[in-house]
Each structure stands twice: as structure tokens, then as C-alpha cells.
Length: 377
Image (cartoon, rainbow, N blue to C red):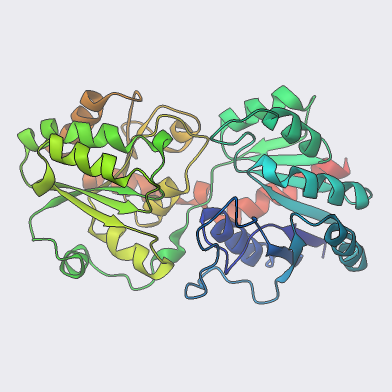
């Protein structure tokens, strides 16, 4: 059985990549001997002022994970590399999503030069670009032996900085582990205090400018003109701009049709929001891919998304949801109206179920096994 060292965030770290890494490790253990190396310090506090850990939500916990890496301490990188050499893996898999990790990963990889490395690229380049991000990304990723991307956009970005890379592009696996209680929509409505008979649009996740929340807010007057019982449910953690969105809701006169749940949502609370929703909306202005689509699919929920980044790779227009052009509230409204007017929920939900294997963690094991063979050749 081949031995793998997995480098990346896992429980108790927050966020989709920590969930992804934990689920990936658990499934890879079916076919490989996996040693998980996570962080004793992920980000310095001046970079990430919010709490980085959540000890209450352990559904993706890796019991034998070792928290070794201080991403800002070069002396620590020496000791971490020594411990990885003692494990003597056949391959190292590294979760990649931001050039902040470049110095740490570059020097770790130089110290571990003899071991083949596979980068899982969640974003080749960061969502918020900055000077030197391309240089730092190339510097680090060129130490890899092979790459896994989750969108064709990321594959193109990878090929723009690495000459003829060994890589594969595969769908982001579905995060169906959040279905903990199998509650019904009516039970979820009751828990959320939402009146029966409402039709729910769910916007879920960290609220950032590029995620285009303002566009679905601006689409709501047209939507509610079609059907007054449609409710927009906004669930997520805002930055410093929450009041701007609240003002936009007020200015559009949709306060009665909008519910805002502000703050970090724990793993155990995710289910009720998706169970209650009729469809999930991603009005993004830009994207590589999004774990929100995969969470939605884990609950058999269709998605309305924009044609940006990797979203068209996973949302099949007219089959598992609808795709519209970005920054276009009218197009968003028309897609929502069509969804309800044509009663697409049952058809689209069945199509989501039929696509399940493509988004499975077993499929990801196949991808890892195949890319290891390609490295060996």
C-alpha cells in the first residue's frame, strides 16, 4: 500500500478547504496509508483577525492528524521536513489556494526534493489578486510533480505558468457529510421560523464582493412581482460591509421577502438551511469553483449560477440548474421565475442525483491513483 503525506488544513480549522482535506484524507485511507500534516499556525493574526478554529464541529476530523507546520517560521520548516522524511512517503499531496503559503511550501518542497508532490489547486491564483501573486505561485507550483484542478479555468491558469504539466481536471467532490439528521423541508422551516408556503432562494457562505450578493438582491423586486411568496435567505459571515447590503435590501423594498442570518455557520447548523431551500443561488462576478455547489448537490438541491470560472463545469444548464451571465439582475430574476413557473425542482433534483458518482470521493480516489501512475511513468 502506497504511503501518502497530506499537507493542508483539517479540523479544527474552519472553512471549505479544511472540510475538503479532512474528507479527502478519510476516503484516501481506503486505498492508501495516509499521514496528515496540518498547521500549528496557519495565518498570523494580523492577516486573519477572526477566530481560525472551531472545536465544536468535528464531522471532518482526522483523528491521527499531526499539527506541525508554522507557516511563518523557517526554523519550523526544517523540523517539519525532518519529520516528513522519517515517515518516508511515496508521495506528498499539498492543498494549494493562496500565495501566502509560497515561502513555506517552496522551502519545504526543496527540503523534501526526492518525494513526488501533487498539488491540489483549489485556486491557482487567489480571488483577490495582488502584486507578485503570479511570481509566488509559479515559484511554488513548479516544485510539484503533478496537479489536480477543479475547473478548466484553473487548468488554463496552471498551464500559463507551468510548461506541459502532468495534471487532471475533475469535479469538486460533493460535501454530503452535512446531512446529519435527514430533516424534512417542513421541519427545517419550523426550526428557521419561516412560515409554511414560502419558496426559498438560498445564498450561502462568506459574503465577499466577488460573490455578487447585490445582484440577487437587485433581482428580488422582479422576482417578488412574479410571486410574493418567494423569500431570499442570506446566510453567511459578512465583512465590514453588512450595512451596505442591508441598505440595498431596504432601498429595493424587499425587507419582507428577505431573511438575513449573519455570522459563521457551524457544520451542524448547515443542514437546516439547505433542507429548507428550493434552490441555491450563486450570483458570482468571478470564481474558480465553489464548494457551495457541492454542498447543494449533497442535499439534491439545484443551483442557479453565473457563467464564470468553473461554475459552468458543474452546473449543467437546463439539467441541474440554470446558468446566466454575471452582473445581470434581470437574467437572475428570469432564471428564478422560470424555475418556479416550469416547476423544475423535481426534474432538476433527480438529475443532480444521477450525476452523483461524478462528484463522489470514490471518484477522487481514482483520480489520485491515476495521477500517481502518470508520475511513475
